[in-house]
Image (cartoon, rainbow, N blue to C red; front, side, top):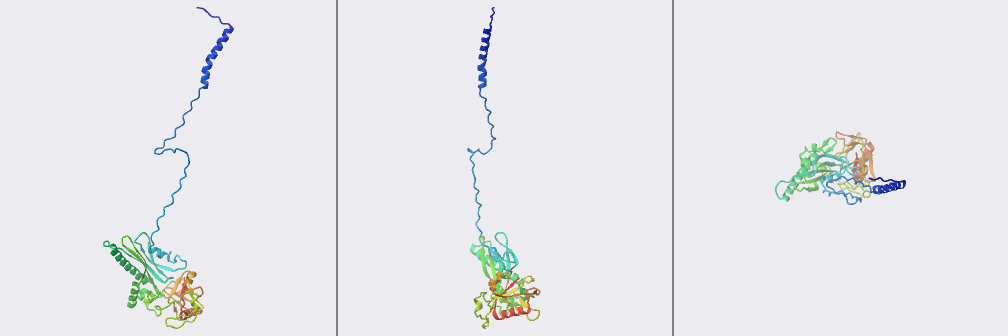
Length: 346
């Protein structure tokens, strides 16, 4: 074996070579790209696909569905006249509830009423069709049943109808002749509305007038009620001569009607109210109209009525109105000599 002697120059060369041998490896290590971490996966959603794009979509709301309006029923006819039992949909109109009947179709009930402002009674009659037979035969029988039901309801309403301060129609029906006449006018009631149901059943609205020869007052037989003619409430008529039932010419009047204010007195409507004083004979108002407001009353009595204020309502059924002596005389003369329409405010 032999040994090598290295001088200072050789040692420097060896150190340089060793540095060159190490440098490429370190450089490669330094320039090597750092691997990127994989992106986190979104949680999978079962049953739906992710949208291809992120473009927002605005969904327009669907318009609400509108059901067709149902066919008119007797309840609609009645509610147009009266909506809350004391006043109808038209302000000032007075009516009185006297019972109710469930409708055959749908929910709700029909309210029977005495229409004091319109001087009439309205009720509903219902008739169930038989189970068998041709549809036309079943409808005919159902209509007959509905008429009979309406007539029966009218008799019940008439029994409670106040005639005067001391009597009702039920009291007057003790007279057989009056009872027969009342049954006759009930059979002549007017059919306002008739509706057939899919099964052939029927429901109809009947109207019976309170006054006139075909009304309740005419059946009572009170003198002059059956033939009483009420002058129209218009200014033109007041300048013309009119005739009474006896044919005599009535004097011209500056008034278009008579207005008796009985508000806040506890008065109640009746078929034949009377105006009276503390002394003297009362005067019967043969064909009155009852209202809750003056504006509605002026449609009957005109815009220039003879207006008086009642002091008190008297009687078992408080329909008689106590007036001052002067007012009572003016009303009596207007009723007897001029045939003016009368409205009473409650």
